[in-house]
Length: 221
Image (cartoon, rainbow, N blue to C red):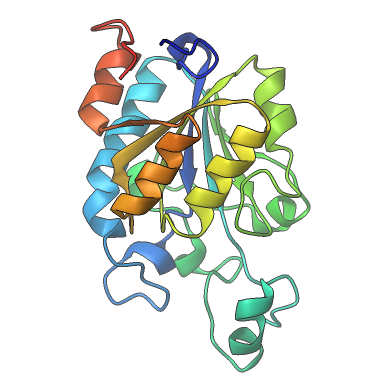
């Protein structure tokens, strides 16, 4: 049975990248998430394709104040004790160059921390999130609705935490969800099955690019 409520509409789609920052991605970085670097080229291809199709992109980032006051409870103590990760204005907090629309773009940390979106290109923004999910305490839902977006395509860093939470938040808000399985780090089989069980569309980068470009119509899996 075809479920019309979950079939992606690429005419009304936006790409969301999660936490693809230097401290989380580069080998040997203080907060390196294994596998993120390996997925970076696929994330880059998705970003390029969305730009070419003139579809929105929102790069979601984390920023931790040096005193840990805005950090998750599970990380606050290590930051208070001197661990420096994703510090505003630091090189480690910056978005990976491969995802930027142009070189030289840096995070406007002060305004991002205030909850403002940073416009970095035609239909492209950076957004700070204070916790795991991209919708919690952020303007993301309103921003997407203002652009008449009903489908989100998700890629990024560390599936068990931020991407997975973002998926469930999006599902609670009735967005159609595309999860690009070879463009998200730290995925595992049971987690993907759980996403499929709530109507998330699981595809690979090449399939996503083809559908975005209109190579073939969407077919219900």
